[in-house]
Amino acid sequence: MSAVSQGNERLDIVRLARTDGIGPVNFRRLMTEHGTAGAAIEALPERVRKAGRRATIAIPSRDSVEAEQEALTRLGGRMLLLGDPDYPALLSRITDAPPVLSLWGQAEKLSQRAIGVVGARNASAGGLRIAESLSGALAHEGCVIVSGLARGIDTVAHRAALHQGMTVGAAAGGLDYFYPPENEGLYRAIAERGCVVTEAPLGTIPQASHFPRRNRLIAGLSLGVILIEAAMRSGTLITARLALDYGRDVFAVPGSPLDPRSRGGNDLLRQGAILTETAQDVLNQIESGASTRIEPRWTGLPGFSEPESAGFSPPPAPENVKKRICELLSPTPVAVDDIVAHCQFSVSTVLSALSELELGGTATFLPGGQVVLTA
Image (cartoon, rainbow, N blue to C red; front, side, top):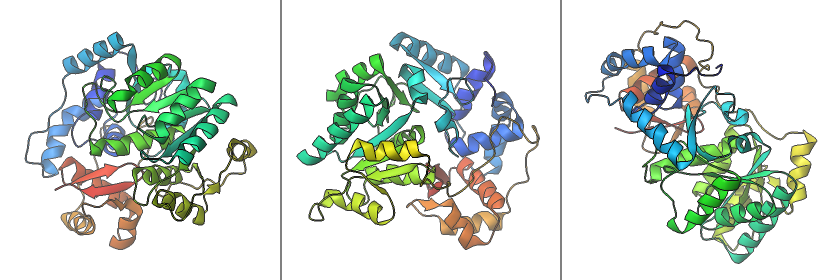
């Protein structure tokens, strides 16, 4: 998408992106079909009604968006829209790139050579030492360290990077809410010398459902992600798997098989993650260009920069298609490609049906090409 023009369309883009049931996938689909956010918003109530949603959909007003922009300015931050010249190029390439970012700090840091560092909140002393060593050395070599502002590995990685170079903090909540509270000073230091970025509006208190979006930012902004201590089924492991889905390198520090915090990383190493003991292991990989990166598991929907036929809405997915897809969904995330494999429908048919189910409040797209049943 070319640079987004000033005026009501920018406000409408934020309004559409912030509407309940409109994730990045549905946002792109609606923009592709209608050409502008304003036209998509006008069509939305009828689209939602046809999708089976009974409750009235709440679309933010232009006044509320303007008020948030003014509050961001007072904080020292601003919004970036997908298509703006300084929207981070690497993030824009993922299939579910966030349409709206709120940032506090220097936007250019989001587009520099970046490496994600993630790990356990309850990290061991050894894990914290490795995080400090790797992050500091990589920052000294000019890499921007991206992490999630959490306790443990994240905090140590940010501090080491600030000491040696630059860092970016990906937040789960609004920029005016410091989580954990003891990291307020770290937030402010990063905003002064690097950048804090989030998908969440101001005033958003972090909840469990917000952390997958934060993890998407870490994976999407980074050339590769280093995993230092992660239990199986942890959020840290989810970030690593998102990086794989986005075609980014995944690095893992090996750990003792006796420590549950090492099982996630050791499992990734068995699956082909790059064994990492020093910063040079990471630098050799990203500088060689001999990528182990894989293509994302699904292609998603076309971007909205060049609408195929603005104003055209495809016919609704047949009820039998939506019924079959609902049978395959569960409260546990399911990959879109797994749905396609088991329902015998085309990718475009499945994505169309899933988009309608999200509009109807039945399903929700998650980062990395997954869907969860919500009703």
